[in-house]
Image (cartoon, rainbow, N blue to C red):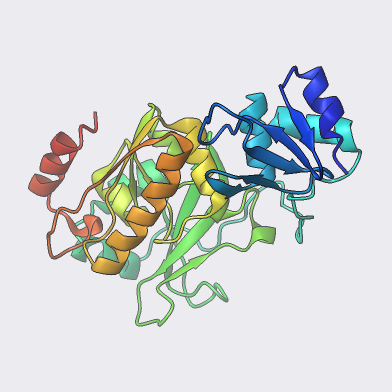
Length: 289
């Protein structure tokens, strides 16, 4: 049980207690009253104006503290694992072992056919390739997911006729689960980012672009975007379903206070297949500098 009364007293958070609720000014909709309510046991949060929100994320927003600071606060005021933070069902590794090695002819052929300069990709994005000897990852281009210069997870793209085009490292093979982060963050340093679906989309357009590794986004990814970027533009594939997902994610991020734009170039191909001329147009239109 999280002792919210002591926590709010110590951090000078204005609150009221009403029956089974500890009421505060909601940090999400910033209403003038105290419509935000934490269950008296601190187990969940609901705003009676804008609805339910993740309890831990709401507390961090209310206290205006980092993740690491918040973890220490939870430990201090409860002595237990946070109710909304599930116990890890895996033990993260200390370093990531990438399957495969140097790109082979089959990988180079695939990249050339897609219009990529494979030498540039190897140098900048550290791509590797696998063969039939790499069980579970046969004939894939291995894409390291790098944060602060460290490989924390990876994804593999098949270069043969395989029903599973993309495979991602398991949590227990990763330092950080791939869907808890964004691809290409090290090359997106400012407070503005363009968000695409796939790693090759990000590689094609270049610096200033991050990838969600699929049309789905986790809460962890949305919170990460909120912490790192003030403004984002979604550049998902032009298909209806992808654009619909972009709008849904955009609405979630806008509710957090991120300035969001949705861009559909209405080309017949996805961002990973743009020509050099189209890339220049996209970077200029979306102000990627």
